[in-house]
Each structure stands twice: as structure tokens, then as C-alpha cells.
Amino acid sequence: MPTRTTSTTRRLLAALTAGAAALTAAFAAAMLPAPAAHAENNGVGLTPALGWSSWSFVRHNPTAAKINAQADAMKSSGLAAAGFQYVNVDDFWYQCPGSQGPNVDQYGRWVTDTTKFPNSGSTDGIQAVAAHVHADGLKFGLYVTPGISHQAVTQNTAIQGTSYHAADIATSTAEKNYNCKGMVGIDYTKPGAQAFINSWADEFAAWGVDYIKIDGVGTSDVGDLQAWSQALQQTGRPIHLELSNSLAIGSAATWKQYSNGWRTGGDIECYSCESGGSSYPLTHWASVQSRFAQVASWQPYGGPGGFNDYDSLEVGNGSNDGLTAPERQSMMSLWAMGASPLILGTDLTNLDATDLGYLKNSGVLAVDQDAIDASRIVSNGNQQAYSKTESNGDVIVGLFNYSDTSSTTVTVPLSSAGISGSATATDLWTGGSLGTISGSYSVTLAPGAVQLIRATPTSGGGGTVRVEAEASGNTIAGAARIATCSACSGGAKVGYIGNGAANYVTVNGINEATAGSRTLTISYLLSGSRSFYVSVNGGPDVQVSLTGSSFSTVATTTVPITVQAGANTIKFHNDTAYAPDLDVITVG
Image (cartoon, rainbow, N blue to C red):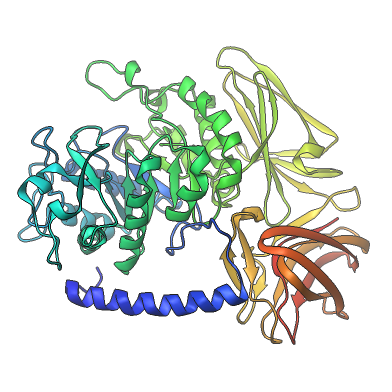
């Protein structure tokens, strides 16, 4: 747990931090202009979140015992070792006496339902559960909705650390709270409004919260998102911020600017399928089908810092998931192709052995964690296919049978996936080799089934190697650093290259089957004129003089190079002046 500080100290530290951040931002703006709409920059969310949420299975009655048991199961099952880390409590953790809104403390913040989450001595019940989750080596998440409780307004509670009160900041407009109701809006132009959200965020940080889901968000709630984003950052604790649900695609740039993830649609659960008071079956194929078009239409907006969220992954409880085994593989594959958070909705204390194998498949998880959104390349009735190119040049292709009643042959022209020559292919679900593929590729799939392929283009046959500048295998030296970039491939770029010999990028791992001439395509961002000096395998520098319209618009240029058989490196630098920002390079 972090060292606890007084609210006065926190505010002073926040002010000092804000001042330093402003100076840093001013300098950065002069040297490396940022795009108008950028990903949330709060130190978390560089890859899609992996974890579990209480909503799908536990639903209306979360308790400390239930949440602790799920955390323990995440650890003992090996899911934590596979990368799953968040244990999130959804709605119904707070006291809700009726439609007048959640009960509040002296500062207008929701209070814990201690019948479900009993205090441990002087420790709040939610804080006690967070400590248990942390003891398992995991992270803890919690749920809120926009606005302020009507009870706080009625009682005119104080705003911690200020002379203001709830009535000074509240509006009469109802805010969305699906189950408790009674939330009203906040006028963020009023003094004390930001301080109220800060005090709530400070409390959550003190409790050990690592993830906040704000539910019921609409386009009218941008003020709440700005306030929560600022409030969570001023706590000094890295806290993931997730938005729910059915967010408007027309405001995607806004969701990306203020959060780490946003729900693109409604709930994945099949509420009409349930019977006898059980949460089972958790979902059905129709809910999964609704995500195929969402993955396609939201593709431009996800990337490091903020991801499209297609809702809970209902894999873990076998037939109780409400899906056949092939459909469960398809659901996980589609979420992975879309680089969605994988937040499990299943009961981790009763895991199905087959499903557990699916969830721990490192090859499929890697497709999700590459943080790249796939594009839909085939949409022909029941034939659905998506592809994306990873930083090392590998191409991931997902072929899906949309139908849950009949088999379908799915055919993909490999050129549409960026494979112009041949490639060696591996089935990521079976681990088996599919040999060399070229031209087009077809597979016959059972109802609701998928084939997920990793294809490595082979050089000499028209293949290409594509590497993101920010790829982990590259050398990013000196002051050169990764920055978010909504226009860039993979959602990131490398800037501050040059203006000194120590500040450079070397792209590594460019493997070629044969030596010879190649074309190097450089995707860069620049406002005005600058130069790269490019060196292949430590050879002579070639000056590449470039112009560009802005640091938020990607441009390309091509350069002839000569490579050797085997591994190659390409260095980008400028020892005397700043170079352009680097997005991605392609050798083909």
C-alpha cells in the first residue's frame, strides 16, 4: 500500500506536479506537437486489460467472501501467471436505500454496504477486499456512475478540503444510475466541483483501487470524464479508467482522450436466457454476433493507452457460458483480433478444464496483447475474416463462421491481409503448422467456429517485413521516446530522435532469407522539413530529407537499401538536428 498523506499534502503535491507537468508539456509542444485527440496518458492501459468482473456471474449480490474467492481462484488456476490481473467489483457494493440515491458520507461520497463488505476494525470493507486481492498479487477494481447522489444535495454535505458544499455544485438534471437511481449532475464550472471528484478519487486511491469503471456514460458526461481523469491522475496512484456502455462512435476521439477503454455496445449477457434465479447461461451466440460489425467499425480508434471494449469474455464455465466450444474459441479470437480488454465474466471457482486451456493459450493472448486492432477483410454472409500486421511483420488472420447452424468455407485473398507473396502459417488454437500459404487461403469451419492463423511472410517471394518503431525489440536510445499517436499504426510513434548522437532508434530483427536489394518504406510524421540519416547494418549513412504537414499526419517515403541474409538492423538518427517522428518501417 502507498504511504498515506493528508489531503492538504496531496493537494500541494498535485499543484507542484501540475506545474512541472505544464513546463514539460510546453517544451514538448515546441519540439514534438501532439495530435488534437490523444490516448489517455496515465501510465496504464498500454496493452488491453486482462482480468475478471463480478457482473456477469455474481450479478446483484457481490460480497467480500465471493470476491476474495474469485481472486484466490485467479491465482491458483494459473490465470494470474498467464497475465490476468484485475479483480473488479461492479454495481451493488454501496448502500442504496431507495430511489433517492446512494447513501453518502460526510463529504457526499458513496458509502460501502457493510452487510456485504464488513469493515475490518477501522478498515473500510472495500479497502479490506482490495488488500486481499493485492495479497494475491493482483489488482482491484471498483464501479461508479456520473454525478453526485441526491442524498448529498439534500444533506448539503461538505466538499472535503474546501468551504463549498454539495448544493453549490449540483444541478437538477438526472444522471444515469441503472440500479440505485437518484444521481444528479455536477456543474463543473462551479468552484468545488473538481475538488469533490478529487476527494472521491483520493478515497479510492487510499483504499487501494487500481481500476475504475464509470457506468451510464453518454455524450453529455464529458465533464465527468475530464474531472475523473484529472482526479485519478492527481492521486499519484496509477488507476485504469474504463467507460460503459454503448458509447457513441462519433465521439471516439473524446473517449480515447480521457479513458483507457470504452464499451462499444450493450451488455453481452443474455438476461432472457436465465432461469431459476441463476446467471447461467451467461450469454448466447447472438450477443457475440453483434460484435463482428463493432470490431470492424471501431477499428481505427483503439491502440496503446485506450482500447475498444467489447464487454466481458464469457469463457470459463463450459456449457454454462451459453456457447459451444467452437463459439467460445470464436469469441476469444474476435476479442483478441480487436485488441479488446479480456475481462472474464465467468465463475473462476468452477472453471471448465477445456475453457481454462483456451484462456491460457499464450499464442492467442499474444494476439490480444499486441495492442493492434484488426481490420475486417472479408464480410460475405457467414464468411467473416479479419487481419492485422504485428510489429515484427507477422500477419494475424482470423477466419470465422458467423453461422451457428451450418458449416461454411471461408476464403481469404492473402493480398488483402498484406501478404503479397508466400508465408509460413501456424494455427494458434492447435499449435500445428499449416505449411506455406500463398495467393488465397480457404478453410471449412463448423458452425460458430474459427481458425486463427499467424503467418510469417517469407522473403524472396514478394513477402514484406513490417516493424513498428515502438516495438519492444528495437533500440530506443537517449532522449528518443515512445509517444501515443492516434493517427499512427499501433497507436504510437517514436519522437525526439536526433539533435545529438545519443538519440536514435535502431530497428532490429529484420530477418531476410537472401541477401540483395530491397525497398525501405518509412512512415513518419513531421511539420516542415527535417532529415533522417539511415544506416543498414552499421554501414554508411544515407541522408533522407523529408517534409510533412503536421506531427499528427502520417506520410511515407521509400529508399532503396541492400540487406544481408539473416538478421539485419536499420538505424535512424540525426546527430546535429531533430529528425522526424518515426511510425513504422516496411522492408519488401
